Length: 148
Image 1: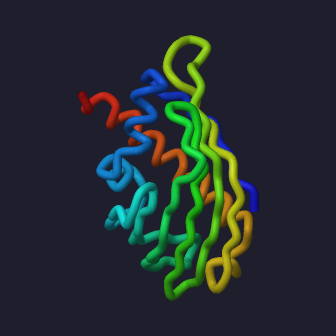
Image 2 (image 1 turned 120 degrees about the vertical axis):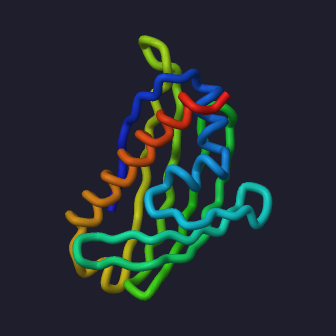
């Protein structure tokens, strides 16, 4: 399944980059995130609660950031599992200065789901992923207004 989105943030690319690499901000903004802990350079362990349609549950997994090119892009690899199934994904986050100021963030990637989660259908999974991205970037915009 392909996942993509474009988001406009009212902050310069450097500030957006800093927020996208701040563990506390990520934990606060990832929908359903219960914990996000560094396990090494650019590697994290995550615990979150999420649902797709009627399938809800707790998930544990890992996040690895690779190919970092500050402040313009990085690649993210995510793996997680729980009682309702598993998800694996890879995506690229790209930041460019916006045409009228601010920053345009593009997210492109692929995800694979298995177990009960996959049985609810790709349409529901894609919709839930897009909703989570919208919530995440909405929160990130709010974080920019309260961070120094």
